[in-house]
Length: 45
Image (cartoon, rainbow, N blue to C red):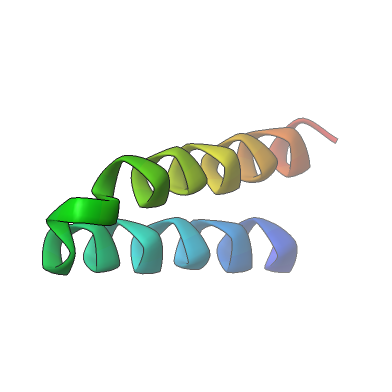
């Protein structure tokens, strides 16, 4: 559960950074999706 919380926190940080940096937002939002995927995987195990 701790790993899932860390992954979701990383996803949130990426989304916040994307809101502040429109030029890199596509990359940061993709990274947020990656962290959410890791969180979902951690939850499944």
